[in-house]
Image 1 (cartoon, rainbow, N blue to C red):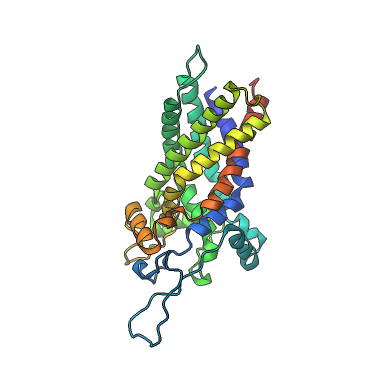
Image 2: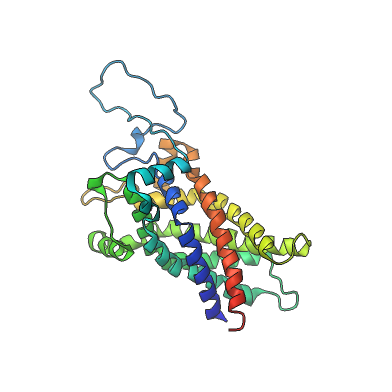
Length: 321
């Protein structure tokens, strides 16, 4: 029964991850909007609220702030990717997504299922919300630690197209990405941002899986719908919204830490998660922590729906095994 939970969760996660990959790529690109390049100190960036940069009539011998980059929405980002890089660019890093879902999501879904079966009251067949949350935190943390190398590779492959041609990493696949990172930056680079990944995964698993089960039980107990596709879609979309709100700030910082380019002999752009958060807020304002929220919810909603609808169907198919 324990292995079955891993198989069911893995199949559903891979299908959901691949079907929503373009939305995840757009989210990553939006989260990196406004980030300082390696040659420009972060403090020279104009704050997010400064919509009208001041005009300087006379040239100055000292460096001045670069022009503020206008923020664009998810549709515009998607259109620009297609125009500049081609339709295939929307699936950049999909091999990393498959590996990530195989490692991370399979582990978290399987562990959550095991803990749920263990902690469910045998008489009432229910589990308190607090136990669902704890199960999600444990499963998410372990799953993230296992899947972090694929997560780093996925972020870099998705972000590569926004860099100038001379600065691109040009990974051929997730295997090539992991190999090059290990060779050029050391094996420890594969777990760069792992604390953020673990924290985010704990939050997303607890908020996503626990809230799905809770919403589903509420709908069925109150007789709002019967146990079927409508209930699964409604509960999963609500769970996706909760997960997006809870995890977006951590996701923005995680994306930036994983994507930073560390050059030999130079200090890294960020010393860690807290330093990245502080520099991001200082340079772009607190709202920067919710950059990419629209594509996050636009992805999290469909991803969660596909995940749980597929999971319910896979469970039906494998119920006799």
